[in-house]
Structure formats: C-alpha cells, structure tokens
Amino acid sequence: MSDKGSVTSLPSIRRYLVSRVVGVVAVSFVVFSSAAYVFVVRPAQDELARVEMSRAAEEAEGRMRQLIGESEQQLALLYEWVQSGLIRANSTQEIARLLIPTLRQQPQISVIAVADERGRALFFGSEPDGGWLLRLFDIEQWGARQHWLRLGHDGSFASEEWVERRFDARTRPWFQGAMALASDDDIFWTDPYEHFHRKEAGLTTARRWTSPHGGAKVVVSVDLLLYDLSLHTTRISVGAHGRAAILAMDGSIIGVPRHPGVVTEGDIRVALLKTPREAGFTAIEAALTSWRAAGQPVGKAAFFSDDGETWRSPGSASCRYATCPFSSLRWRRAATSRSAQSGTQPRSAP
Image (cartoon, rainbow, N blue to C red; front, side, top):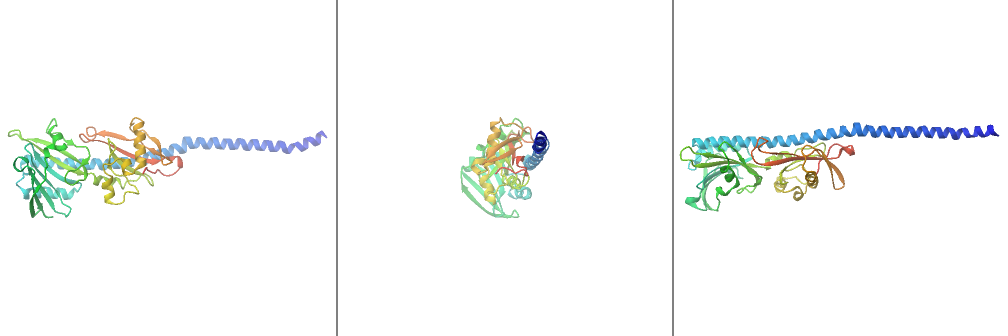
C-alpha cells in the first residue's frame, strides 16, 4: 500500500516543482523587466524627451536672439544717421531714401522714431496698403496737432494731412528709459507692450544721443513686432505633437506655441500678451504654475498633470538682457511634453 501511495503522489510533487519553477521564472522576468525599464528604457525615453525639448527651446531662443540682434543693428545705424544729421524732420525724401530699404528687408521692424527733449519727434513706418507714413510732432509749436505725410510704395509723395491727436513721445516708456541710461553707449529695451499707433504687441529698443554742441538730448528707437517671433514659434514641434512657447516674466505670451486653436494670423495676434490661461493653453499654464510652485528652478525637468494626462517639462530657463545679449527685458522660454512613461514620442502641452 505504501508503494502505491508513493507512486500516486509523484504527479503532485511534479506539479508542485513545476509550479515553483514557473513562479520563480515569472518573478525573475518581472524583476528583470522592471529593472530594464527603470535603468535602461525609462532613462533612454527621458533622455530622448530632454534632447527634443532642449532642441525646441534652443530653436525658439535662437530666433529671439536673431530678432533682438537685427533690431540693435538697425538702432546703431539709425544712431549714426542722427549723429551725422542725415535724419531731420524737414528732409522727407532723405528719410524715405534711408529707411524704406531697411524696413523692406526687416518687416518685423514696424516703426523707426527720433524724438527730443522739446517734444519734437518723427515716426516712420509702413502702411497696410504698402505705402509709407511719416508722422511729425512738435508739442511746443503745434500742441496736439500732428503732420502726417503719406508716401507711395516707392517713397514718392502721395498726400499730407493734419491730425488732431494728443501724443507726446516724452511720456513713452522707451523715451524715458533711454533718457535714464547711464551712458549714450547703453541700449534700453522695454517690456512687451501694445504699440501706440498700430495697436500691435511688440518691444521697443532705444538709445540716447547727446549733442556735443549744447548738450541737447535726442532718443532714437526701433519698434519690434512680436508677431514675427510667433510665426516662428508656431512652427516649432517637440516630437510628434509638441510645442514651444516664449513667456515674459509676468507669464504673458510673447511667442505663441503651435496649437490646434491657432490657425490664422488673427489667432496669433489675439493670443499675444495674454497669459496661457487667457489664451486657452491649459497645459502651458499648468507647467508655469508647477514651475513657480517648485521655486522657479532653472534647467530641472518636472512632471505635472493636466486634463488627466501626465506631462513633462524640461525646466524653464530665464535671463535678463544684461546676461543675454540684451539690456533690460527679462524673458523665459518654455517647452512641455507628455511624460515618456506612455512610451510615446514627446508631446507638448496645449
């Protein structure tokens, strides 16, 4: 009986041993798979996401630096023309000859201005119909009256009119900022704002010149439109679906991201200078909130949630114009992507 009992027990022992072996193998597979994910797959995904987002951020920053550099070069040229007496309010044809070729080559520059301490000023820029508008001011002599000279596409005289509209260049941030500079060699940049005449979002760079004959001070300025920057940032992708945005330090948008809700030129213009929340870019807003809550770290990746999804931000970088090739504006670049935990290509925040 005992021999029979031993024989009949062998299948149970065999099943027991097999189940133990299968269990050990399964546990080992899970352990090694988890280790491979934690130490190999996840770091590789994070690195790919980091590289992709860094590329997008550098691309956005590069365009910003290019626009700033071109504006400062034009400001330096304008400064030389004022010094040499080439730019004068009563030399309409000379102004057109000098400034039209420049503005044609750099459409992101909307207006070039020269203003002095006595309230005299000239503003030159393009018109929607392709022509040009020269606006002349003299507060002491004309008060609120402005003399407008319209020129054709080729710079030839088209028409003139007197406009009753109170404006004093001396009250504008760019004029006051330039007048407060320590040296004529310094350059002033405004914060982003809506330009007075064209009602478009932009920046202004300005510089002061002090005449060696009597010490009269003149400020020259160049208006830079943010729309051109957004034309670039709306084309930047991070992975398959990613986006990048450029924000001012107060959180307002100065470089609009690629987004399903941004289709037309008007969509871009409406979003400029709004916060991400106001513009409907909810994940950019979530990334900004998360970054601020973390103490505004520089270059440190972070995860955050929006609308039930987990996203990854590479960490924002911020700088002043003094430490970048600029002078006063503080700005920040930001790019976000969905967490690599899903195993998908990086995807940006809306």
